[in-house]
Image (cartoon, rainbow, N blue to C red; front, side):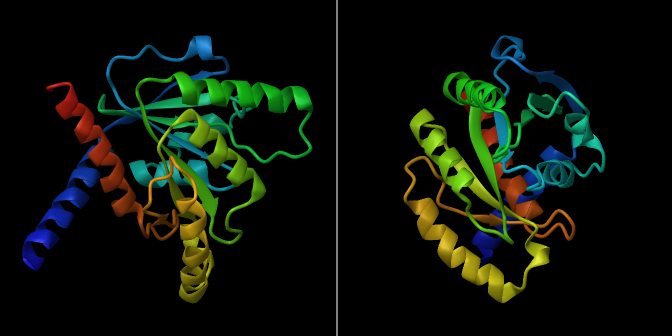
Length: 223
């Protein structure tokens, strides 16, 4: 039984590796819901988190490309939904960062309208990866984002970033705090994903988890 379980785990990791090894290209930036790309059955995985949490670095690490997500850092695109096509099998959506306490109210209102509208009304959206900086843990703005996704009934999973910046003991302590906090949220996926874009720790496992969602969509569509 143990050998069979190991084989299945290895197969899932390989499926994730193969999916994220496909050509990944920037599609478009959408500053408004009316400009979202047309839906064609391709599932979408979105990435969100506080500003400077490492979203671009994580997307680059997942796809094995060093400059892919730099597109979302160009002036004027920081408050847009940035779409990337992964071999026609999956779309990655880089959502605008949050937690900008000093931003004008008009800007934060526009952000909430764009993000909330996307979360509530986007049929192909299969999951949101909520990135949490392992050095800081869950912040108030993260809690607010989780509550927003609970209300939108969007399944999300917590991805801990920059785990290479803390010790193994500190990571274990962080997990013991984050797990029960996440468990209080109705739409949260119960498994946490500690990662490092620098060392690539946890990246294969996250790829496998997201590839499984793409596989479910393929089965659902009979492809």
